[in-house]
Image (cartoon, rainbow, N blue to C red; front, top):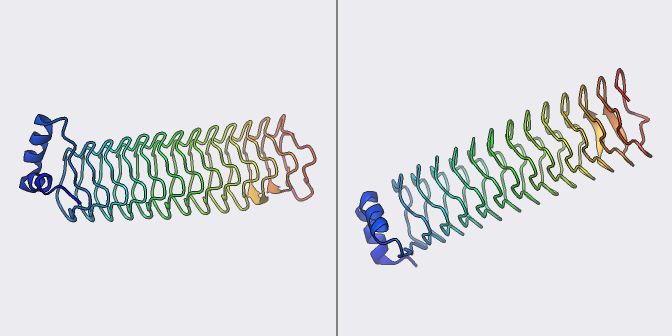
Length: 285
């Protein structure tokens, strides 16, 4: 439960709260389970604050400092966290459905088992954040930096990740069906057993990515760079590799029901690959 004295200080005004935080830097406030729904808390200093289980539905937290804060189990439905600082924050089991986190900084934050469906994460900084087993269904991560982030077992179905930096990200066994990855950077990303059915990766960069046993059926890889990528035993059915670069890629033991028109497969390993239904018209082999 929230400390009533701490809660009273906050209720007076954000300026009053921030001044108190500045003059009492060693005090760690407890606002756990506090009801702060629809409260205007722009630029508030919640650094290191315990907000576990707090109600923050529709709260305005624009440019707020929530770095290192404990928000586990909190309800932030439709909250506005534009340009908020959430680096190293604990957001496990948090409800961020429909929240606006555009340009927010969540570097190394822990969002395991969090609900981020329909959330706005446009141009957010999510470097090395933990999103394992998180629901992103229908969210927007256009232009975000999620390099080295952990998305293992997460639901990223129908997500906009166009122009997103996913280099070295962990997407093992993630659900990426129908998502948009146009011009995204997935260099050295781990997509082992990931489901990319009907995803669009046109002009994306997947150099040296791990796509072993991934579901790539009906995926659009046109003009994409897959040089050095490992697609061993991937599911490739009605997949479009038109004008794609697959230089030195690994396609061993793979059934290739795909269109490789004008693709560059120079140096590609096709050992024991089934190319019966592949279209290599004008491709470089």
